[in-house]
Amino acid sequence: MRPADPTLAATLDRAPTAATAPRFIGSEVYRGSSYGGLHPLRIPRVPTVIDLIRAMFWLAPGQYVSSPRAKPAALAAWHTPGYIAALQQAERDGEVSPEVRARHNLGTASNPVYPEVFRRPATAAGGSILAGQLLRDGGVIHSPGGGTHHGMPDRANGFCYLNDPVLAILSLRAAGVHRVAYVDIDAHHPDGVEHAFARDEEVLMISVHEERRWPFTGALEEAGAGSVFNLPVPRAFNDTEMRTVLETLILPRIDAFRPEAIVLQCGSDAVEEDPLSRLSLSNNAHWEVVAALRPLSPRYLVLGGGGYNPWSVGRLWAGNWAVLNGLKIPERLPEAAEAVLRGIAWRGNSRGRNPPDHWFTTLRDVPREGAVREEVRDRLARLAAR
Ligand SMILES: [Zn+2]
Image (cartoon, rainbow, N blue to C red):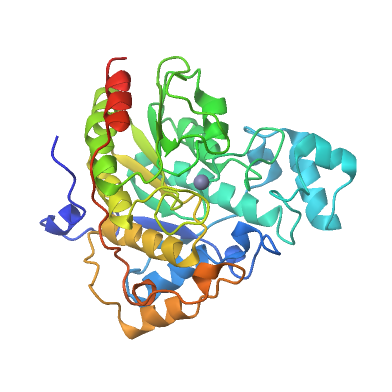
């Protein structure tokens, strides 16, 4: 199969109409919200994306949808009522008891109690549930606040309090959309999503994640009921290797599965500049995946996920929006967009002290092509043989 061309959508012979134009689900709840202290999620992410795409005039009237906050009853489609109540109580009290901490993994270093600890994840979840409803009749949605793929039914896990990708898939199902392909290119394995759907043959799950990294699940051999494909990849995983994975694993499996909807978790922590992984992708690799999956299903939801370098995250997800809309990403950003990137501070990380100029002036990274290593080829062959 041919490598996907991220500019493919630009060659469409007609402009998207209001009815078919992609929609962007966002919220102001993320602005100023921080997990606090030196937590990796102290940084701005969704607000940067919103500000960048507004500065680029990339939002047409009607494309922006403000995310509702999911009600406890809607969250209970997958989460336990006791856990939802504990999360609401944690927000009210600003702290949790030792019992709640032990039972629900709340108030820990990874999953701290912060001022919006219920509202923020419930808004991301509300966006994913709404996306499932909006996609009933088809369409494309980017919801960068979603992608919290580690959340578990009864506890917080890996910075994720709720699991909005699971809720998105359940929402699609409630809207009558049953065959869903879930693709996850975050640096970390989506243990929460796998927990939900590993035994479900109507969900195809493909995850590409760094080997020997938290949460240490997602081994090559893990297959669930047969529709789970886990590809752990080695350090320094490059753009050429990702293209090979796209062509030999992701696209053929989706083709064969014939999904009614695709959900892509497009975490941005697998790029070279991310502080929490050792992978070496450029954002071009993500955009190729985003573009390549679009024609394979009538419904397409692109979520965010991890991403702990504030410049990498904002540039990558703003670029996702451009790709989904067939918009040309300029070589050099206009002044207003550059000002958004220059306004970011990344305290407590040495990379934030003297950021390279291209983090301010461009969206597109320099591609990081390289050799396709033997272990990557070997693992792909083993998955292909299944
Ligand atoms: Zn991650």
